Image (cartoon, rainbow, N blue to C red; front, side, top):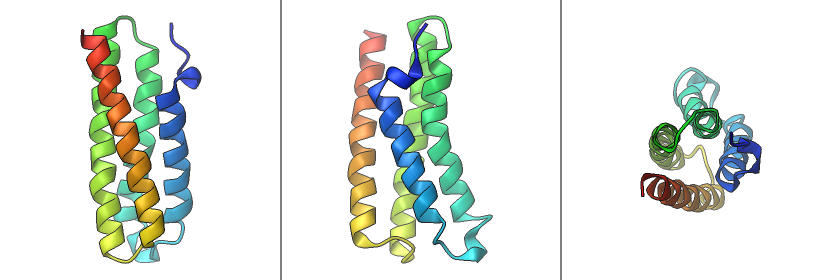
Length: 117
């Protein structure tokens, strides 16, 4: 049994999720059920799937949840770019989130590779 709270990738995913929630509070009200909702759901999906995967038995099953987390991180990647291009995020905030997300995606991919070895 794994404790997701001890995994660096979960901690990093959780932090990104918190920042996305904080930043998206400033998005236009008319996007509440659009981009804001989609971005938040994807942001929650990453640490949630890492945590859920920790509750599974076996490396293959855990790797499957990590793949879902990776896919959600890729969705966030695009949504952040869209938010930046629409002027919802400053350049510095976008660059910070993009950098942190890229680092997280690399770590998740590496973890998946180790589990599948």
